[in-house]
Image (tube, rainbow, N blue to C red; front, side, top):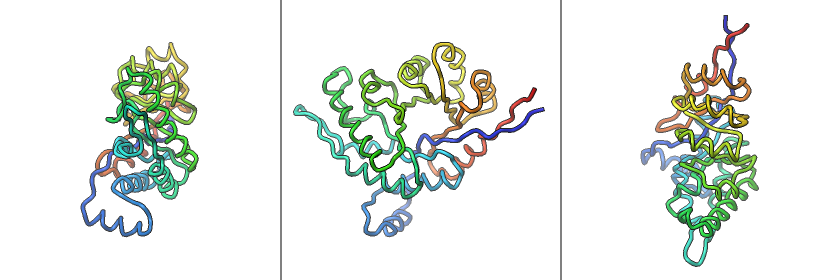
Length: 259
């Protein structure tokens, strides 16, 4: 006999489809008197779909936010210049749309304008500018940040990792997950990476696991190692994401064997 429990749900961002011109024109008209562009549209639409689906921890942003950094954080041989205004405006839009909400951004190391992490002085200055963007968004009442990375350097970890800022590498290797757990107690894994827990759980204190697009086998494996209150069901929406977030919300109800 098994009872059902509902796990908490969380968004790790999205990658929405580009709207048609009529849809975008209608959106721009609805934002009359406010600064708005295609990125603003993506933020609002994605958050609205998450709220409709009942995602408990909605988050706005994703890898499409990369374009925001092109003018906001620039570096030359003379140093790095940062202008946080556009991110502050994004924060205001997100809060107006969804209330308390998390921001999702590409990590410094994956941005095209980032200095080579091997140049530690230049990369540290870049991360300092990036950290200012995060702080100013939090000043606008953004609750925290989720940073998508391919790998996390020591400099990124030292300057950015905190209780309110976590890195995620859902499809990362076990080595990448181990490096993350050296600096934080949360990791996000896709179902085909859940087997990493067999090894990681003995080495690290994992206080929160975000299981991305889970399947039954993934749940079984996770529940062998972690209590349900330490598990969240997550997703990263792509394309037309209304049905996607509904599937994520529906998948969070799982059977748990009783004694």
